[in-house]
Length: 615
Ligand code: ADP
Ligand code: MG
Image 1 (cartoon, helix red, strand yellow):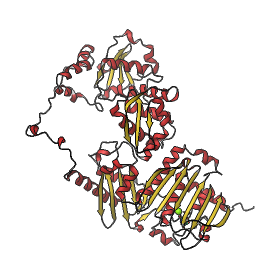
Image 2 (cartoon, helix red, strand yellow):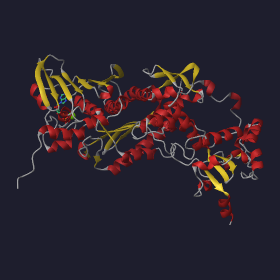
Image 3 (cartoon, protein in one colour):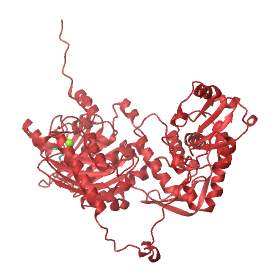
Image 4 (spheres, protein in one colour):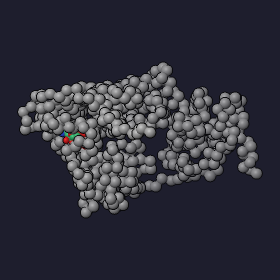
């Protein structure tokens, strides 16, 4: 029988390898930037068009390549960075596999011009799909310029898999940040479709972080510093009060390389324990230096996963040094010469002692009693609260929106049916509603007691409203008398631009989206002016997360985000009118039974349920 095993031709092998190295334009950006850094460049320009799908170009002023090296650099396993296996344990460069250029050239049109400072003329090479189109002598500045066009031109499946320009641009910016943050002594420029997005001059670590993430970052940073035999740690954590719901501003660098490490992340989060709310993440920029022998970066081709020899020790050191810094930061006295003295305690109040608020509990309160509920519910609350602020605390200790009342979450089998309520005649019953635990709106229906989760229900109502506005017909915005200026980072602005059309449809209007301070000129009618900044911040944070989470359309994601941020919260007091409105709006929805995140919006406690309980 004939032998059947054949060696793959080089261009096929390269294409296969490319699949590992190049997933999207951002992967090319990473490889080219790293090559420029390895070449000792001090100024690096990154130029992209259409999210890198049309063009990715990196221009550096590094050492350049000789004519032969220029040609060899596109061969697989051709590298100047290691020569034997031993070198792998002493890596000081970012590249070492010698696969990147070969892989990129296999799946794109690559044009390279390079010159060493010592030679008079440079080399110009053009390669398309691993085929050298030409190589010629050229007059060019010293350093290297590589442009990559038509990525995946010969792999349509890959090309089709790419996301929108803006999404790809965001991935590119992620890579750009990772590289720029750890090399403040290199100047970086990023241009997208002809306009400059970043111009990062040579500076310190701290200033680089601020230049990337915007000036508001400066006051948030707390320095971390630790030197031990195992590791040197430097960098910053963000003050606990700036912990965010979304991940994003978390950066570890090991030996000048961006790394991901859930284990070390845990160490940092652990150090923040008790200082931040659950479900929020602290921001950090931590630079670790370890002996190159004690770190293995070879375990993954895209090289963000690493393995440390002594992870446990590293964990402990990291945790304690972050804790130490946080401790110092909070006990250190603040010397603030710009402090507004008007903010200090007024003279006359200095010697007074604070009066503890009184807490009175109405032990006779019975939520199931409609009559009582009506007088003790929200409307009476408002009347009383006018009398004195102490009343604000009334009933507070019975209010525990998260924990209490879990018995109401127990659903009977027939409880949730979307058609159920529609068939009932609402007005036929008492039409009375009341609020329970400031979390539920309760009403009576034919088959029993209807308990609506006010937050989820309102999310459903708003979700359908916004989704309709985005996809079917525009909603009305309210013009602001004075445009509101909101500060965003470049990445946040890229997200804003991406969702701008949908935001316009629900009533937002923006000006100066290209500048660091964006002007908001109109907002949806239901957003109060003081909330605009927060709502936009939260929306953007959702999107940062969301674009990793495939399968949800942009319109849905935005409607979900707006609904989540604007919906009535648990703990919010609703007057009778709002309770009624919520009830009607909910059952006017297409899908009243479930919140946008597919949690139940209401349950019905039937007479049978009550009877069972009373057995
Ligand atoms: P690696 O970086 O793993 O060595 P690459 O395929 O990325 O592999 O690059 C191959 C070689 O080409 C490098 O080892 C280096 O010698 C050379 N090279 C690539 N980019 C540059 C550049 N911008 N300036 C100078 N030399 C470069
Ligand atoms: Mg490389």
